Length: 108
Image 1 (spheres, rainbow, N blue to C red):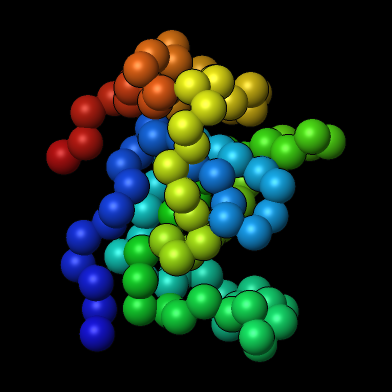
Image 2 (spheres, rainbow, N blue to C red):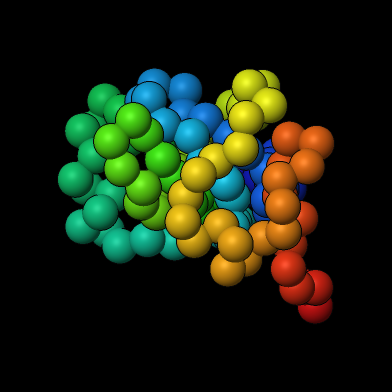
């Protein structure tokens, strides 16, 4: 059954449940919308279901910055109160405030 509402919002800081990274949500797909090759590269016992929201993150870990694509089931809200330092954040968002980043633009 397709879930119709995303749990997290654009600009929100989240962290991965299993892997040591966190990031800012900059886009949401209502269901899986990446390549089948990408999906099959995930070990079968860790593969998330496709019919749930997937989030695009400006992500960071202790070593690098990157873009991540993560299923809702693998995310939790970040409670650290700390900003994310990804260098692309200023291109999309305003300054960090109250645990999230405001969008620089309005959505239709």
